[in-house]
Length: 132
Image 1 (cartoon, rainbow, N blue to C red):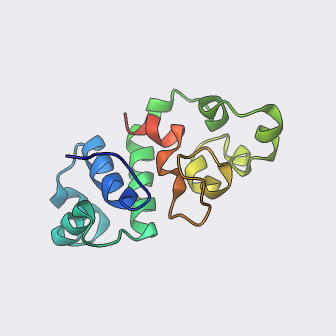
Image 2: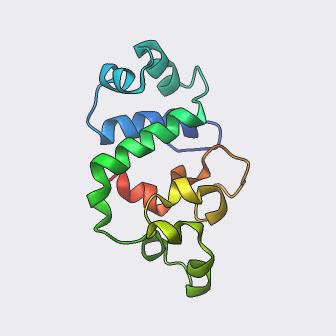
Image 3: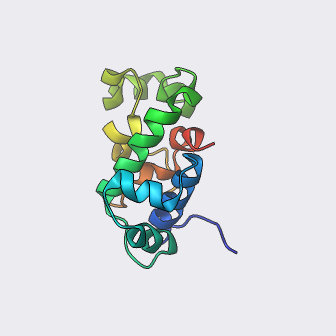
């Protein structure tokens, strides 16, 4: 089974990985998001595109439940950004927290550098640390 994350399957892989990281069943995630179990199954199988809003909700859940995994470090410490980049970072106003939400499309630390790609931050080191 190929588990490599590509731009084509990023949403499907992310939903499943986030759900497993949260130790939730498909039914629990469906209830939490206010969608059907079939929707979650369809997202995870790649049969249906995952709306950006759904991915954002899942990332917010991960941040709320597992934010301690970041050990209070701001994003720029995790991504090893230069001092100049830190000063320009929009997430600086949040103390470097929730950077994937505040500046995910601007950061350039993801595996996919296409700024038009849905939530390219799903492969950034900060999100990866949340999901471990």
